[in-house]
Length: 155
Image (cartoon, rainbow, N blue to C red; front, side, top):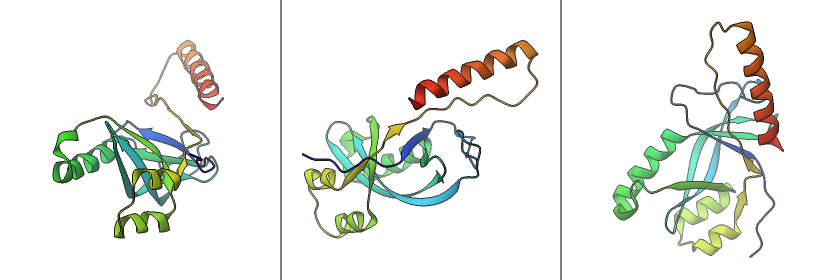
């Protein structure tokens, strides 16, 4: 099976109180864009969702709130597949809107959906450091730790 070329980076935002109106990597303002996300729910369920997400065009980063996604998936599973409610899920990538619409109007096998999938280039994680006053020594060590973490995550 041949997958399409990877596009976009993903940040599955675990912070309920952080909207990331600015990109956590480059600090530019993020935009709101709709993406057709393809999600794998354990054990063997694929789910496609047309969702509004934060997007940084500079970094090609899609930011999705984990709590929102979990709520949508729980509601869907309660209605359609109660045996997988609460199972782990993984956002595989995106698909073109025309392919997503086709999947809404006619039956699409998992193999066909995977053929139409654009996987993410990488999934990034960011640690939020609360604003406030920190002793100078602690600020330097925090900045150095963040620089090292960002380097590791982006390589």
